[in-house]
Length: 430
RNA sequence: GGAAGCGUGGCAGAGUGGUUGAAUGCACCGGUCUUGAAAACCGGCAGUGACGCAAGUCACUCGUGAGUUCGAAUCUCACCGCUUCCGCCA
Image (cartoon, rainbow, N blue to C red):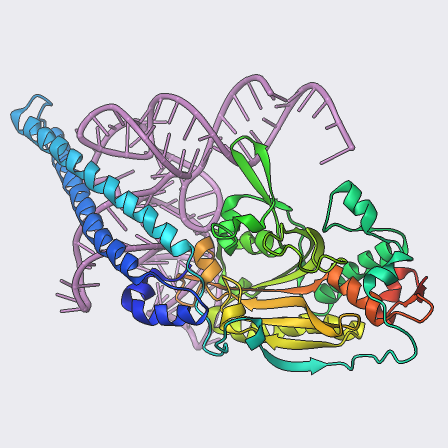
């Protein structure tokens, strides 16, 4: 959520910046709501003050020995009743306006940071850097992960039987490799990057989803379950949701910042609107595992943190020896809540292209404002903190990348050396 | 699922209808004392929002919501959460 003060101060300027990311802010609607709000709130508060003062006077008279049936007291009581009906009217209108205002604000995306290039869609993202040399496959035909995996325990048919499209069953060594990847990532982030491992619920309430920005706008992307008829819980689309919401409605002591968490969780996404895209293989699934890194920091630190946090995700790719490139997303391609995002794209030889495997974002105070997540600053006052997160990495897609980049002519797959401790020392899947 | 109890400021903990947004203690901040520190003493210290150039004024918040009342932390109802005991259970 954006700071309402900012909108009041410079609605035109804000609209212009939002336009860059393809969002049309309804200025007329805002001005209408704001004019109403001012009148309604002032009048409602004035009526309340009147009632309070009258009641206080009654209290004083009673304390001075006047009875309830005293004329002076009776007059005041009648006056208060009149004021109360006035107040009720103003207040009802104000509450309506307030609800409309919230609805209006909750669907306005974050402002892009000034360093974010302006652009319409992913074609206008900017490549920042590249790491690693894509391997040449001169001596044999490159297979994609579906073909390689077929002989190694990657089973889409069983998954289709159990659940339908966009699910995967892993068996044997490939299941172990999947687990090894997650463990490897967790160990690197906890031991080398200073993150605290957390285990969190995979089902969360609507408040949590609103806190990080998935609701109210993106309900169709989520899976939901029902505890009972009117109590809905959502399956997390990313660990970002439960982990970031750890600080919802909290005031963190300043000296505890930065908070750094890492979590390995499954993620559930309905993938509505992506019918027909990436239907082959396990690139786009309804359920996939991800290791997510999250930080809560002081506002002045968030942009340097975005760089180091992205670096933490890059470390994983480098240790695994997977070539990748780092993309700075343009205004039009960024997520709703983000002020600045880097995507890491891993080289997939079978697709002869780079594909997203990590997304690292600075949300500034956008999520914190929705969550009321604050810290105590130097002046001992509560102040909104900044939140960031990044995939470190998407485990399913990392598995795909390993299978494709480390495939051998005989259909086997070499295990990258750094993973072998988690693989019982074996060197190859075959 | 059954029974009982409890939800007050950063924490602990008073407060059962009236100038209570809330005693007190701890923590925290400033000061006095001290060579320095500790102790002691003095002072300050909730959040959010509105109006205002400002000084400041006002409103809301004692788990959440509704109600009773001229007036609610205090009374009523519903909901949520927590604790304990019993039952069931991975």
